[in-house]
Amino acid sequence: MTVNVEQCHDDSTGPGGRSGRGPLIAFAVIAPLVVALVVAAGFTHPWNAGGGIAAGVYTRDYSITQQVASEDLGHCLQLTLAGTMTARYRSPTWSLGGPGWTDPRLSNTSIGVRAKDSCNEGVAESDIDAVALTQFWATETCGEPVRGEWELSMRLGRCDQDLVAGVGGRRSTVSGSSFTASFSGGEDLTWRGTMYGDSMCVDGAAGGDVTQGTTTTSVLLDGYRICLGPDTANRP
Image 1 (cartoon, rainbow, N blue to C red):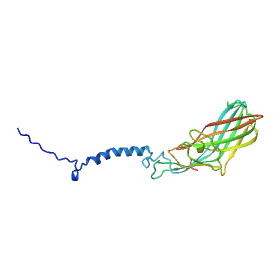
Image 2: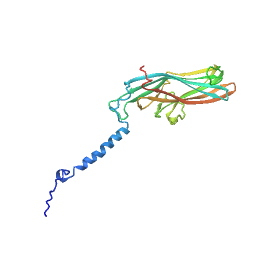
Image 3: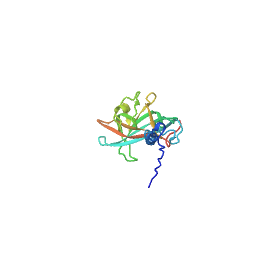
Image 4: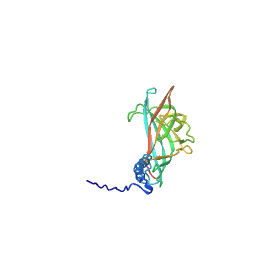
């Protein structure tokens, strides 16, 4: 019995007999890899337009209070940080990080202390004689601060001293139960770089010495956080 075998034409060969499968296979492997790297790098803009925030400058006033019981003084010390936070939201046409915040600034900052008999609500206030207070700030991304007159620093969160700015240290005699030190004018605090995302936050801490009579106690409170975002940002 004779069997005729028909030789099939190999469509995978190109001109000169070279295979055309190589480039197709390479593209099939490389294309998903490139997409994965693009997404991992945050290169989602202009496909991701952000959280619906229009480009522009936004601001908010803040006042945040923390309190701690001082066994040395037998009082509750309440520290308050207040001021104005400003930043510019940009949605560039083409950016590896997508939309983000630039030129973050804290201005008209102040730090205050109030002494009370205890940390309960509605208790009597207590007199203190002298205070020396400092406030410290750092970005979530540990961006480099443009310190200006903000020279004091400390470790704050995961940011080292080079990435934290502080201002204060003014020792003042107090007549009564409360004291506030204001820092305004040229003592604004700014940071370099861009913070990507719909919201931008900075973390703070406050500390210093409080004196009553011959007793001086040191206090340090962190957990201060202020943010600009879709629910908190206002046009100036």
